[in-house]
Length: 572
Image (cartoon, rainbow, N blue to C red; front, side, top):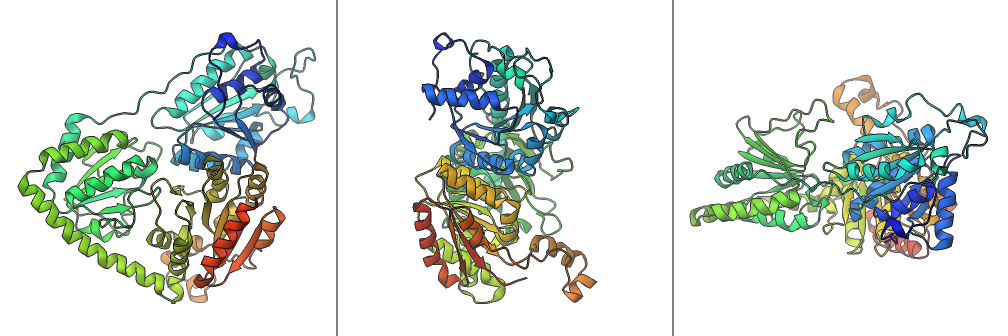
């Protein structure tokens, strides 16, 4: 935890860049993920001064690609709940954040992205003036334009004395529900201006509680339901929610479909249904908790007369223009507040007759789900090529240390991972967003957030390459935050092959098994890449090898290097 100043009176007169470093520490930012440029020189000097003088400062983490920086910040927040800060270089660095902007948006990561901005002045008596050719071409008419679809707020610091208020406001907006990104541009002259006084922290508003009348109606609908189903995706983002959700499911006898963006219900719970979506087809009441996409209508939908209830911090999903699922009763609320209140309301409605009905349903549904899980176990024990991912991931699950943190980006093998890999609350994370390449950079942030725990990123071979892996592995070594990357290597972009097969089942591509530009062979030598970045790697040819391979990988991590396990799966 960074040191923090206690009052503005104790601070010496300083420039705006030094004030920025003090503010980051005071806002609770433990790590500043950064990629410097020509306009971050005042910030670098301020960091050096804080280190030399023992002043308050966040730990800076050099990320040699900006995508890694924001991916790390996303995962760091997932594990700590703390606000995040990323620093990039002007417009080019902002653009290099790439798809991680989408991932931060969909994960509602409270991160302030700081970007340099070309100096305005050529006058040499103004500190920070233009002094390089690059200061002209790197200037854009609308630098924050790339952030507008993904962030909540953007601002430029016009003068040093305004910096404190703008930074405080950025962190307040980023942390206000629903959380998200703020973007602050920092012209070099402004960073070298005298700073104003240290402003007080602007507290974000308290998260919203549910409307009591609407919550009572939700409870009544659930209490009267014959075939209730709960669908959750991110309720476990707050681990304390997991126990409450388990009690609700037990009380009602309602199965929980867990989309597993976080660990929402332990997989050994009798009412854990994984992604067994058949339950939706016969449900009469469905409760959506922190769900972005409750079902895919092309594959499965609930009955037309089913009642759909929703509790979400952002139930209308305005950033998804055509989100139009038929919700009968949406509640805007933080589930940390709503779920305990819902539990109390249901207990108040639990007459002896209802309790008998709920208990009978619990036994019936649990028995049905025993058969479902037995099917998952058969897949894990199978030697059929189509079950290879299940077998490999079951072997991985058996070998993972209990305290390991798993970051998942398995793409088309994700259903197998959900079936086979179980974790405790707060130890399983998926980006839940479409832009690939998050997990490997995220593992750096996760390890910095929880250095005492083994961190394991599980990803496809395509998503591994999207992650700029050389930058992530190198930065992790430099930061002393090594992790294990398990690459599920089927030698293809299977996610880009399946739509061709689905849309053109009798087409030329399917008939000839010719799916243009989806073949990743010859395969990248993942082991050599790991060694080039100061770690090591190994090829795993069968599930039987995974236990020993993971033990070796964890020993490699203990010695300070990242380990990459190249797990070979049958080509699709």
